Length: 243
Image 1 (cartoon, helix red, strand yellow):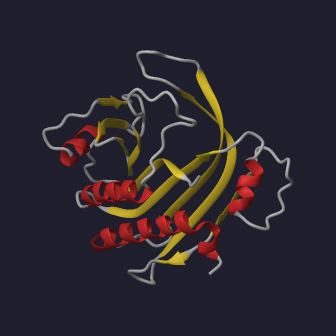
Image 2 (cartoon, rainbow, N blue to C red):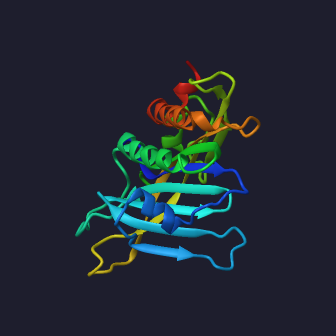
Image 3 (spheres, rainbow, N blue to C red):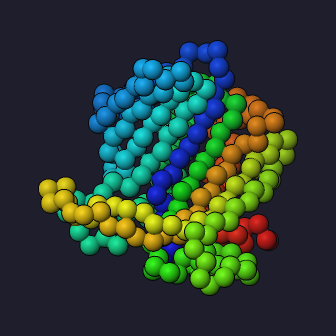
């Protein structure tokens, strides 16, 4: 079983000192005449955190806004009436989900002074209990995990230049981990006990290095590069760094 996405996220870091819209206003700019299914504002939060979300086209779209930062993410909506899932619902079409996030993020970026961006893929796959270390070892060949290892994690960062300009660098943070996740199996009308399933996770966080801010007029190109690199890592795994 290949990795699927628990979530796909785009992050914009925006310059302070400018007017910044809350999540409801951002939602309105992305989905005109379409109110979100839910909206929350943390009135006591010093960061003025607000969240808007809605189920659109089979994906739950979540927008978070706070001072200096905007997050847009998508997760898989639970299929109606499904009771035979072996794990929590995940996005099978990772490239399609990333394209959706990229589109939304670039539309928001045009409304703010963005100086840094990130694309984060939280990937996972359900595995058999006791096989977690072996499954991670398949992702990272020749790494000396003991066969009976539990609570395994491995991570690193590797930098490279952006394609649009060698004057800017991106971080490529990769982390593999194993654990258990709980989910409710069954339709809402017939609630059942939470099911715990073992999984192997692969988190890919590709972001512009903070030392040199991105130029405002190249944000779209930077986002395209970040998405392309994240998808390349998702496809090739650790081999992306060995070629």
